[in-house]
Length: 199
Image (cartoon, helix red, strand yellow):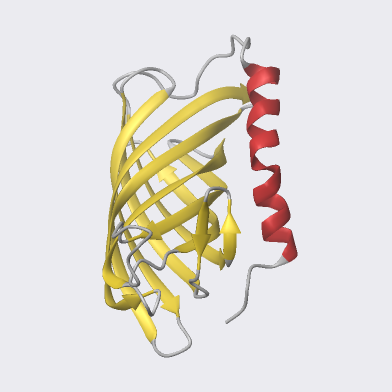
């Protein structure tokens, strides 16, 4: 186990600037979205999570477990650019004491803010509930609430298939409060890649 690498911290620190830059560059774009209102998109993805120990953004984190996860999701487009969905994620936490496995149910929001040369760029904001086989982090509980956010890109492939990729800041905590001695949390930067398709 180790603390977050310098590249992960650098990427996370650049996240607000990344969001501001793309908002400024593409806020006025009038490109044709690759998804239309009423469309449904399913996807599967895999992710590696690099833990961010200590104070990150607005949260402190004691969790040091690297993670590997696989997710499946179903999204419905409420407008040409905005989709809501549900997802299931299975995660392996490589904790020092014991390997831990978890299952997470997530509510999903994705906004495709622009397209460029056939590629679509989006922003994710998700939240959910995580149940694990042991406590995560070790001085916490086996039930945690989660949220994540971050940018991504969709590259259309043949037919209705697309390649998806991105990275997200992922936070988990049991929400017992700052005064609880069992309120350790874990922050991580998750790098992910997946395949999406329209049924």
